[in-house]
Amino acid sequence: MSLQANVMDALKEAMKSKDKVALEALRAIKSALLLAQTSGTQKEVDEAEELAILQRLVKQRKESAAIYLQQNRTDLAEPELAQVEIIAQFLPSQMSEEALKAAIAAIIAQSGASSIKDMGKVMGLASKQLAGKADGKAISNVVKQLLG
Image (cartoon, rainbow, N blue to C red):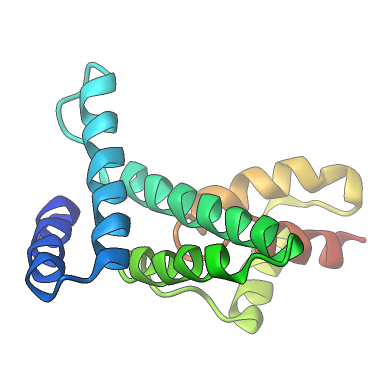
């Protein structure tokens, strides 16, 4: 079943249960997918692009929640974090830190990177191979740690 079909099913369930936070998050996913479909010449959005869209939505909400928490506005941060949980249900499970370190160590060995100067090359390879499985910030931190 496609992501769009899964989102529509979840949207129907959220409407039935009158879950406002879930409705807001699911409508955001639906809107982002529709924008991606209609913005380019391609008719169908591939799975990698769907993952990128979902990750972007999660990142936006996490950043908003962090700003709200800095300003002591937990009343605004809580719905954002709840939406993160709902959107994350449609993402593949994230890699553990140990698995991430092992995967990046293999990428570093494969690419022949030896210093922090090679970070860009490693990040490019790691981002492609680990798309959807790990957050970009986590990948960056591990690459810095292993090359530094």
